[in-house]
Amino acid sequence: MHHHQGDQASIIGGAINFVKELEQLVQSLEARKRIEQRADAHPFADFFTFPQYSTTSSHGANNDATGEEAQVTMVETHANLKVLSRRRPKQLLKMVAGLHNLRLTVLHLNVTTVAEMAFCSFSLKVEDDCQLSSVDEIATAVHELVGTIQEEADRDTTI
Image (cartoon, rainbow, N blue to C red):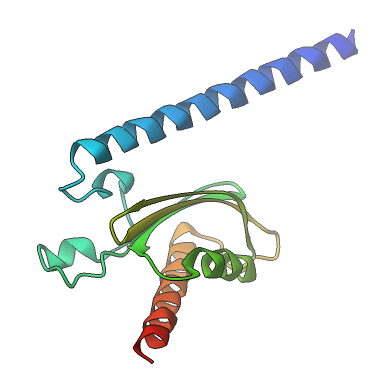
C-alpha cells in the first residue's frame, strides 16, 4: 500500500515540475515577444519588477549610462538572480566563478543579448556555508562582482 502512495507522490511531483517548466517557458516566450515588439524601447524593462540595483532610471536618456541592474529573489536555499549589464569579454565565466566563490552554485543560467547589453538570469543554490543570508546581501555582493568584472574589462581594453 505504501508503495502505491509513493508512486502517486512522485507522479504529482513530476507533474508540478512540468507545469513550472511550462510556466517558465511561457514567461520567456512572452518576454521575447515583448522585446521583439519594442526592441527600440528599453528592451529589458520588463525583466525587473523590483531591482535592488538600478542605474538606468537615474540617468534617463543619457547614452553613457551603464544600464546595470540586478535583482535577487529567494525561496529557502534557492535564489534567482537577474543581471543586466553591458557585454564584456569572459563576463559570464567570471560571473559564474565569482558566484561560486560567494558559495552560490549556479544550477541554471539563461542569457539574452540585445545590442551591447547582456541580460543574465541565474538559478542559484545558496550553499550552507554561504555568508550571504538575505536578498539584499546577495544583491550587494553581485552588484560589487559585476562592477569588478566591468572595471577589469575596461582596464584590459584601454591598454
